[in-house]
Image (cartoon, rainbow, N blue to C red; front, side):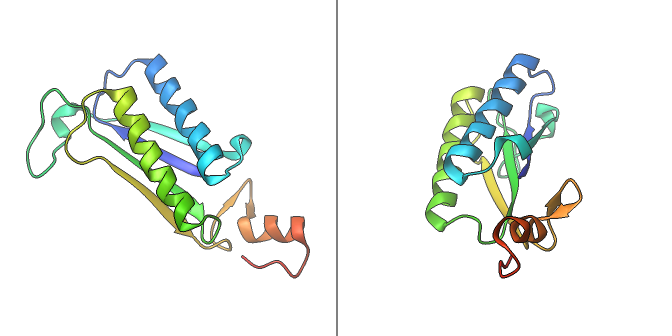
Length: 136
């Protein structure tokens, strides 16, 4: 896991840049949050720059971004989550260049019985690994 969605306010972002963003975010999820690369999915959604507003106005010459990631409740410490948010922001700012005054990185924690991959909940996957006494 996890599933991540990166929205970028540049509908003409080159494919090579999209691929580099996907690789970099996947690497950060693995290093900062201990997420398995083989089950990490990232969607890069491009929106027109003229549709991106911060504080009610556009910021010409900047590339807006928003990263949201679904993770299982309790799978990461506050320190790990904080480190990922800081590193993801720095990575996005480095890759995208000038960014507007607000770029959000959001981690959404979902209960292990309500979140799964390939038809198996995180609770069931953990229980299979650790035995029947494992909890979500």
